[in-house]
Length: 71
Image (cartoon, rainbow, N blue to C red; front, side, top):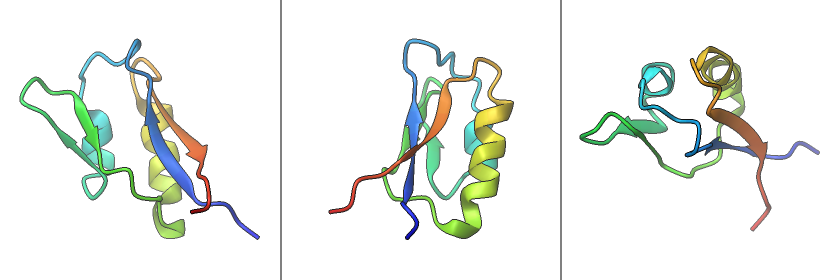
């Protein structure tokens, strides 16, 4: 059984570089100051690889993939 994963932002680390929105435009949009707004939806299995890449490429490592909760 696989657990859905969700995108999490560490707001104390995020500096609004916006790279995460480039990698995951279907889950992340930027606000008017360039900070990410996450849709909160589970990351589909076909998108997990790009989500991991986005987390790894974040200049301040403010993005993470976390296991979601069922229901």
